[in-house]
Length: 110
Length: 113
Image (cartoon, rainbow over all chains, first blue to last red; front, side):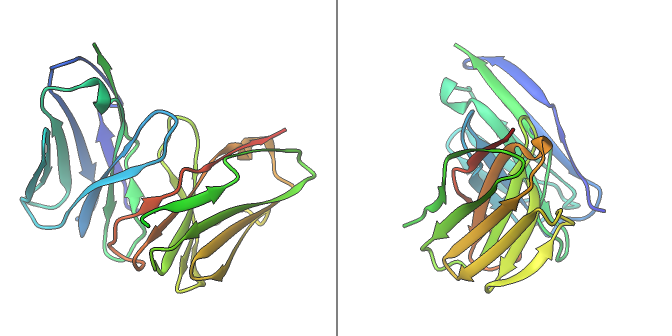
């Protein structure tokens, strides 16, 4: 079945450093979504990418969808303590339910 | 109103108890979901309701019984659970089932003793 791999599992950064998490699917995706889950919280939708090669920005966050629609990345510039949490990518392939990556847990040291 | 409301927030139950988790949304969404999330793991899909009909059951044990009384409400009935069923149970909704983004509730933290 479809698998979505996400790396790294953990990332510890100094406040102000950049952060990137990567997602790789075993199959071509119809779309990819990114969610953020704060410690003790629930997943919150950040963005959806649909087109091959698509790049979207939200303030300090940059999201990319690969040309082959099998990989994606989330890059945070100049991390802040408010960025702490687990970032999940999740992809649809055909008509299958959304498949979540294992997530990248980001901690930011002030 | 862009919220998915779940009750209760916390639940402790014994293995012989029967309890229910409740979920409500008033966004007019026609797809509703139950997910199970263990600590430090991604959400794991259990059930999908589309237009109040059960459309996906991810081989969930029968001690979990979902119910969708109407388009705004989703319940999860629990009976004879095991300690390994302890987890965060998340309800989510989307406009329709398909390529839509999910709105998650804050979850019910369940402990089975």
